[in-house]
Image 1 (cartoon, one colour):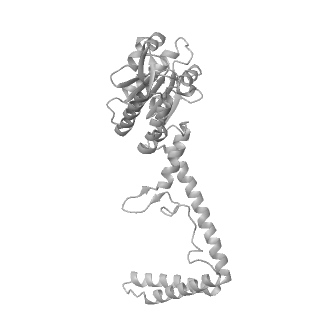
Image 2 (cartoon, one colour):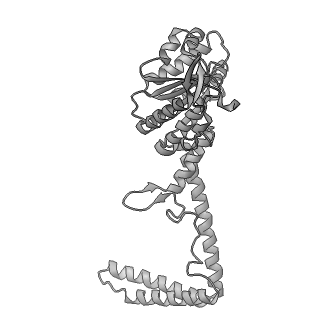
Image 3 (cartoon, helix red, strand yellow):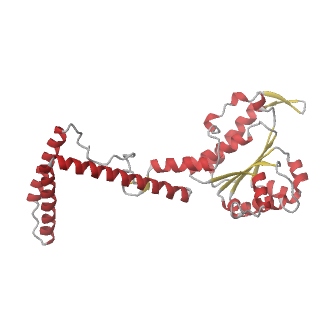
Length: 319
């Protein structure tokens, strides 16, 4: 689902640009005809003969010979005049940025489809509005940054293999989107283990391949808006209705009685009930989450529809 508001804005921008290009072409044509009045006379004659031929055809007496002769005469005079001015054959035509759609935003054919030029701009704006880091994509992940063997609880642990397997799972998750067996992801682990990178990589692919809107926010931001009555964003509905929600840094927001746990529970519960996808990252363990928010909220995080990955290892940003 493309962002409708962004799409309308881009099509309006494109239409405005197309009008400018058509106007510029009309001005070039007017100046050219002023320099070559004989071509202008031939053009007017061609139009008049075309109208006359159409009228004869409507009256049941088709005769297009005069119109064809007038068209050939105009084309010959036009070509000669363009050559005399040192101009190309298409010099008087509008110059459009996209040769496929002629800056209309739609390709012509059996079906009227959005042109790739519009889709590219819309998807780029969707990524920008989601505040996704451009370097966080599946193609740009450097697994060599992750150590092969680290010590976790006094035991050797292959951190690089962990990330390779997790990235592979998440890539398959995007392939299956939106028909995921587990539509919610919860990434738990310390800082610098790649949680945010991975969520942004998923979001980039969802936007560009699935063309679905992603809302990227943090638990801190949602709680801050809840304390203000959601005045700044209008309604909690924004977080409930987004097709895909990234909820980053769960556990770093302040705990306000009657606000924090209740708001987060409402968001997660309503999204799960409506089948919308939610991607969560937290530095806390499941036990820490239960202690912080209570079992009621943890029950929303630990349901069978949620894939939980516990990341272990060394902070790669500190290497």
